[in-house]
Length: 70
Image 1: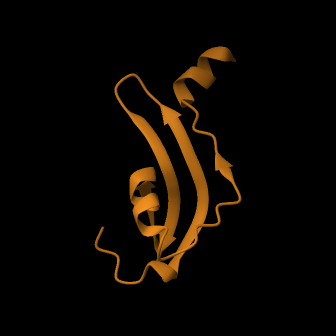
Image 2: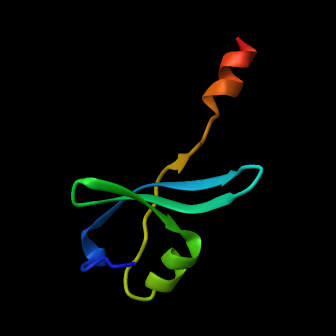
């Protein structure tokens, strides 16, 4: 939202994850030395000015659910 230079943002992966109360659809990016989640709406809004090239899909897992399966 307050990014000064969208061209310095590095794409890490796409996220598409639903929880009971929220839906996370967008991308995980790195800007400087910090990680950010950018919603799909914001990616779409910036796309006329910057081409996005996400090569990876990130799968979100629940550590508690994984532990229960073991």
